[in-house]
Image (tube, rainbow, N blue to C red; front, side):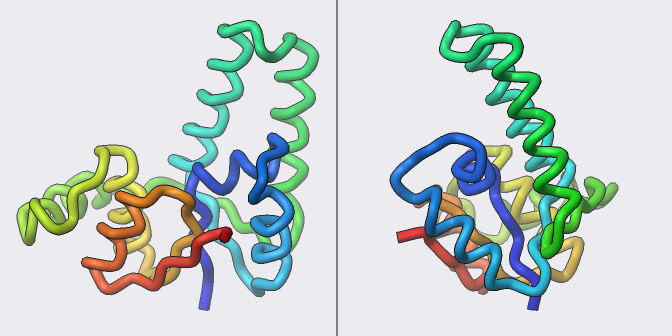
Length: 144
């Protein structure tokens, strides 16, 4: 069963954080790790934000973008397009139970992408997204 990789964990493959080694090990143990176009976009935006904020040099940012592309070209990673139904699915998820499954809009879109693709497992470090995923019946894997 495929594992959906959220931005919070994809960033850990590029930036050294306490959970980085565990995220890489969890992904390496999978047969298929799905990274959506949304996840790749968010990761690219975060690299750009660090460049704009002065914590990355231009050459450092370019190097990270190359590393991202190289990582996503390797097994078990698979890049998936953003499904056209994701926005409607996200809205439907919120209408089902807005209080118990609250998370930020982009996190909700990740869950909608999962639903549209028929995925049931997510690797995330985001607590609110994890609770929302659990409320939808998804299996949540946390790098802890």
